[in-house]
Each structure stands twice: as structure tokens, then as C-alpha cells.
Length: 336
Image (cartoon, rainbow, N blue to C red):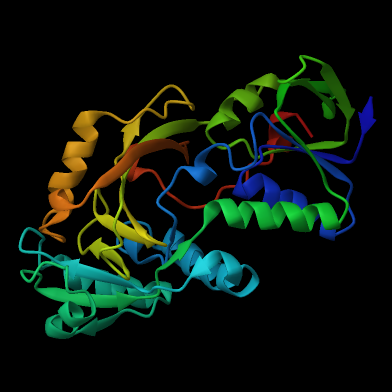
């Protein structure tokens, strides 16, 4: 029997970050992760460190959170970030009336969005379509999700944090309306591990609903699958976005020598639904063509998919669901 104050379930960016924060404050904690660290969503995204500009019109609160987080991560995790900046480009297929809403939203969220001349944008990004009509410069960046989570884990260990990877939580123990322990199984050996604790942080991402169910709780969480395409060329130096309401296939993100095109949005019942389809890949190429006309001539390395853990208490789903952070305390449901 192990004993600690807090058990964190989930070894992605949120869980590892929570473990690090707890340990830096001197609070004993153990983390459980069913796979390796960054096993889920944290390793299955486009690697965009959002400026928030993508959300300014439909979810300004999330946009403000994004730019604040962007600046914090640049400062404390600069070795994980490539400060590329980003362009939002209006193509002939996009509604020019959206531009004014975008500019106002950026101003409200505190995001520095500067319009630049299209000729200058094409000089900086020569592969961009010459048909683009307007271009805005924003502080988007690229982040290495693997490295960011790994460095958080290294810091957590230095402060006394413990991580049990390949340990799947199988039960949450309750006593008199309070959490008193967690049971996990070692997925390598099949051995059972019991951990006594006073508190559980459920940071299991797309699996968070299942974890809450172990404590008799219902969390309105909907896994949402996103497919991405990886090209064997870095044909843009900056993050390039379509200047329109956020949708499928409208972001190109450079990383090292490659470029990632993303992403789709499709509701799924399975948090591990990570198999891309041919139809999704072809659709991404269609939507990406107005930004980069030669996109079909670039070599595709692979396609991959991940699931977003969307919190949907009001029944919103897909693109309509907020991308903001949500902390749910179940004390008012009778479980301290």
C-alpha cells in the first residue's frame, strides 16, 4: 500500500503540470498514467501554441486564456517553443465581412494582430497563394508537446513527484463522502497497486468521464476526434491560418523540417478513436489548397489522429464547444 496526499490521474500536459505544481508547493503527490507520458491528446495535436486569434470571434474568453498561456509558456518553457509568429490570410473563398469581427475580437482579447501588405506576406512566405486578399500577423508559435511534458515531468521529479506510467486506474475508493484511495493495475505485470490519498485530480483528458464514473459521478465530457496530415517539407516558416471562423483543415504548422496540416472535428464515443480515414485526409487537402496551391505536390509522411476532451455541460459539441479550461469540484454533488 502506497500513501500520499494527492493522486493525479493522467500523464499529459494537464496532469504532469498539476503534479509539478503540487510538488513545488510541497504537497506529496503520485501520478498514474495508463501509457507513457503524453500518451493521449498531448502527443496528438498540431503543436500550435495558440495566440488565441483563432477563437476571438466565437469564444473570446478562450482567446484571452490562450494569449496569457502563450506568453507564460514562452517564458518558462522557451526550450520547447519555436517563436515563428503566425499569419491569418483571407482567401477568395473566405467572407471579407469576417475581418472586422476578427480585428475587434483580437483587440478585446489583448492579442496583437497587425495587418501587413500582401506583397510583404508573399515575400516572407513565397509558397503562400498569390490569391490571398488580406494578411494579419499574430503571435502564434509552435510548441513541442513531447518535450514540454517531458520537461515538466523532469521538474516534478526534482521536487519529489512520483509517476507510475503504464498503470491504469481501475477504482476510486470512497469513505463517508470523501475520496480515500485509488486502485491501479500495472499494465506490464498485471500487479495491483493500492494508493491511500486524500484527494484525486482527474486529468485524464478524453478518459476523464470514465474516471469520474468510478466515483459515481457524471461528467459531461465528449471525446472529439481530430485528424492531421504530416508533410515531409517545411514549406512555411510561420503558422498559417485561414482568416475565417475556425473550422476543419485551416491551419498549417511548421515543426523542424516538416509541416502539419490540421485538423478535423468529429464526435466519437471512444477516447482511443485515433485512426484517421482516407476521406478526412482528402478533405484536409481540399481545404488547405486555397492557402497553399501546391499542397498536393508535397510528400505526405503520414496522417494521425487524436481526441479532444471537450467539456459539454450545455450539450454543445464539436466546433461549438468551448476550448477553455474548466475545473470541476464535485463537493456540491456530495463528494469532497
